[in-house]
Image 1: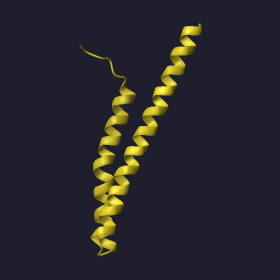
Image 2: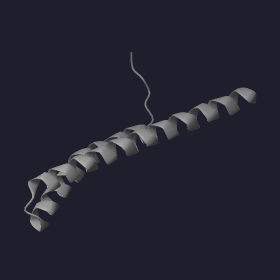
Image 3: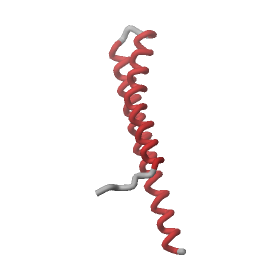
Length: 77
């Protein structure tokens, strides 16, 4: 059963997918150049992955609430 998914949802998903891959890797290797401690580099890379995930969840909740508010205003009219 096909579902129409708005372009904005796909764009956000693609953005966060790329960010989930790129930001932790860049963080890890950038810190490796500046420190010799792999524990710090790995820990901060994991923290970056968690920040991306948290940002995605926040964006998803904001999108859901705005679409439900739009539905309610359409029903009232």
